[in-house]
Length: 130
Image 1 (cartoon, helix red, strand yellow):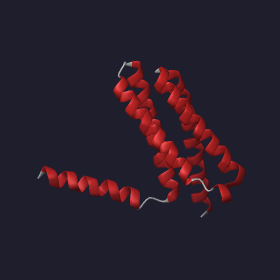
Image 2 (tube, helix red, strand yellow):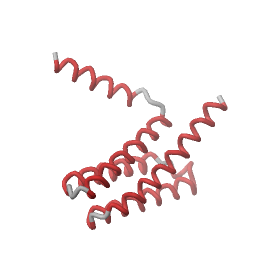
Image 3 (cartoon, rainbow, N blue to C red):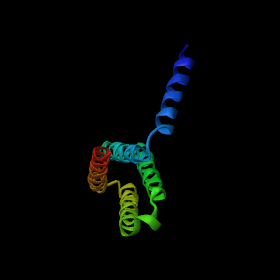
Image 4 (spheres, helix red, strand yellow):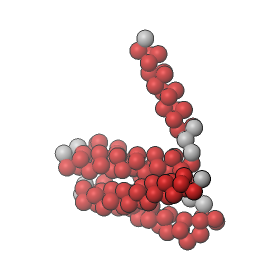
């Protein structure tokens, strides 16, 4: 019985991502990056090196995914600027991981929340225009 529930949940999760719009997928990536960064920050504050490392690596992986989603050819300067910002955040996460300094992660969370907020606003404007 329990394995059926797990299987159903896994199917639901898979379907959630496969049926999401590109806009929604990017929003999910921002949410994930923020959540993992905040977990890493708490883990550092609690002295949990292993958890902080894992959460930082997950945030970095999400940022690399955001980079891969950029279309620099069509996005021009905006896409290049976003890529540079994502690379900067990855570098800061590396520094946070090496130095175990939660202040670096706090900066990343602020940047990600600003980007997420802007992305949400774009979605609202697009849906109003339809």
